[in-house]
Image (cartoon, rainbow, N blue to C red; front, side, top):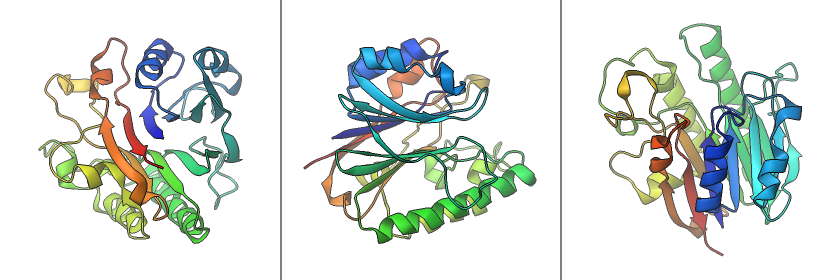
Length: 257
């Protein structure tokens, strides 16, 4: 079973890119972030024409998450992250596919920091950690996939001091990600490639794609019930180099039976 996560950065603007990647890569499940479209503008028909059914939570202009499944409909289990009934941002989706509970996460960016956006990021992370603990307690197979907006370690970003104040690399952001992992989750990409660059994001500015100055923001975390099934993982980095590309590339894993 192949499961991917892809921050598409405006699904309708980049629909041809998305359809081409899905057709070529053939993931069984694709978790999307930053849809940036109204609920009624989600391109469900275009996706269905190439064999993908979808559930989604979106809002105009910002945010938005979706889970696509090839040849079947995902079974929606949750469309908000618990812990704050006043949080209306479309950042969390959860669905079952082939007996695996899969999330699409778009964690807040948190910039500028310090400030209310960074406070919101850390509070959202705390809610995710609390919910993830409950998922682990249920002892079901879970994949926490998405754009976490966290660079976990210094090896997950190109060498630079220009981003020292960025929310993506702050000690509090990294500590929250580490607390999540320490519950017992497996960072799939780093497990199979423990050393070296593993970028999933290259900023549009300053020719960072051309200079290969990237960072790893997109993660797939596996519960202990399914981590032993991990057989392959990677990043489709060529997708970032295509015309009209998102600033992210798809990351993916393969789970054996």
